[in-house]
Image (tube, rainbow, N blue to C red; front, side, top):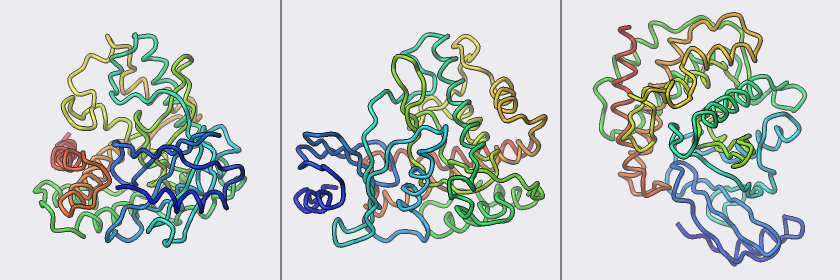
Amino acid sequence: MSLDVQQLNRYLAAHIEDFSPIQHCTAFAEGQSNPTYLLRTFTGNYVLRKKPDGVLLKSAHAVDREFRVQQALASTDVPVAKMRHLCTDDSVLGTWFYVMDAVEGKIFWDPALPELQPKQRARVYDEMNRVLAAIHSVNLGEIGLEDYGKPGNYFARQLSRWTQQYGATDHAPIASMPPLIDWLNANLPPDDGQVSLVHGDYRIDNLMFDPDTLTIKAVFDWELSTLGHPLADLAYQIMQRSMGRDWHIKGLQGLDTAVLGIPDEQGYVSRYAERRGLSELRDLKFATVFSFFRFAAICHGVGARAAAGNAASPDAHAVGAMAEPLANIGLSLTAS
């Protein structure tokens, strides 16, 4: 998916201070939802994220929300890229888009971190844990995000949303999804009143690390962020431990994490609770089962876009193929 660079140059020169002409525009192969591009100029590098072309599901690909939340987080302990401009004029590139500064650093694509030593792996996971706790500790009122999500039971809202999203396509029905949805509806916990900013897709390959200090320089891909229950993000981290090593988005299934230096699930959860000042984390099993369901629904949607020919990545078919095993694992957890 190429961009009209001449049109983009004219537009950004009028909306970003000291913007110089784009010398190179390169599409990122990674990322399945919103097409993302690196813009290289003489005076600096930028990243552009836009809605995909074609017919989109309602409320999906909300680049305006991505822009808003990262702009608001600039004054907090959560590391984010500097936002430059949000364009809601479809005549420029055909869809809404935003531009942010490019952040230089290291992205780890494999959660097993084969390029690092055990102490470094422990450092990376502790840093992920620290920033996750920081996200959930943000004072929403102070940064103007108190209206960033709907009130009420987060899991009930999300279960309804992703059930509808899954049912909105007739692409490759998954046999384990109906009983999984039934279990989630039957075991939905009561609203405990916890509300925080939630990222919605908090995993290692959505983080930019300083290659020397292994601190996180920026958290990316805020498309699924909202106000909700912090356990959703924590459970999403736990989920990756059961994902296969040969999946397109790799997991840690079958690995000896103790030998690798990666904290086990209990240790990771305990450190998070300590950072948040929490004595217990109720309903974590439900949140984990829900994470498998939601990610299965997301991957199913990616597969549907791939089948329709309007996916943002050439790897979309591989992501879509993860939907069924994710749903199967989620359903298996309901019996434990």
